[in-house]
Length: 402
Image (cartoon, rainbow, N blue to C red; front, side, top):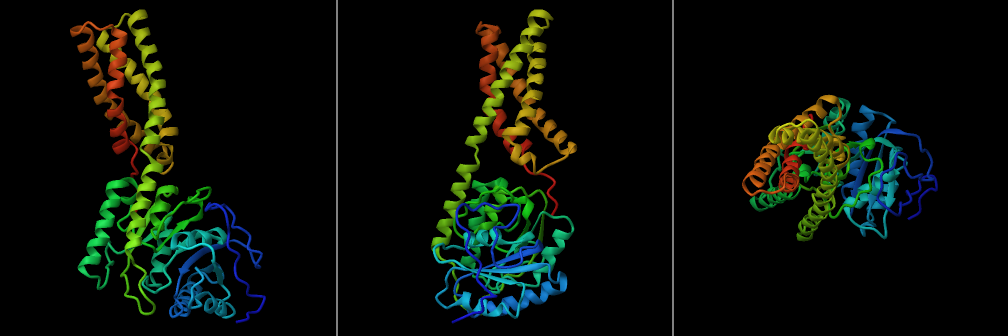
């Protein structure tokens, strides 16, 4: 099958899965910026591709004529999906097609599409018409309201899973529950983390190197991107009209592996190390102030312990907010949010101060331990307590508009 040279396929990017500020040049014509780029990953969708391109083009031509692109990324379908899509390009000037031969997988297909995309907003929709195209306008409405991401959800008002069997519903909810256990700060940000139908502003992903596994690209974006404001809209998951379902046991295995990979890469071990380094600096601050108050001011043991610890808390908060939990802090900009984090941090650490004070008095007054050694032992005893409570309470995403 021969096609005009004016409608070439997009070259497939290689190397890391990094999202850049500007697209990887396609050498295929116009590279001007656009408002929206929608990726349609396909595999054996010959019966659906013409329908979905027509429906999406009709909707987007009304909302943003000439300011969008549809990018079909096909994994070398044996039914010739990519060839059918390429034949459609003369009729739909906003359509671009990529044929991947060496790589496979929905998530990486989406990212490769984003890498060549020109849109300020990047999106993804399944190519099997199970995601109703008309929901695009609702998602775009959330972006126009100022949202950084808009997610189509089956679990909010207006959403449903159509005629799913009990077993499929159970497996879906079970997978979400596992995600909440392993990655509560990621999976818990949206009602439908398994959704494959969403939009996100490019700026939220610039410089991020994604490393997805399996089909659940949204979880990867939530975990590694910088997405402060998320809007959700309900949609009814449709039953497939053409082609065959691609849901397999391997997908669930890949999903679990993906969660575990993210869990290990995102913490809390790395954060704990950084928290410990900051805490170590706080020890010097704490001990220096304690020394000054005890030796030079001759303040009482209890008051010296409390005041020196409070100064160290302020020091630790500043460094933790900038470094240890900096990725989370950047999702909660503004002085008001920083003040809230500090008050939470101080409240959590207040319990640590009380515990530390009790331990210092116990070791010094009851066991006769040197006062400075007693102070060091007490500090070490409450470090893990402070880390875990602050991770769960002080630096969690708040005020995400939905």
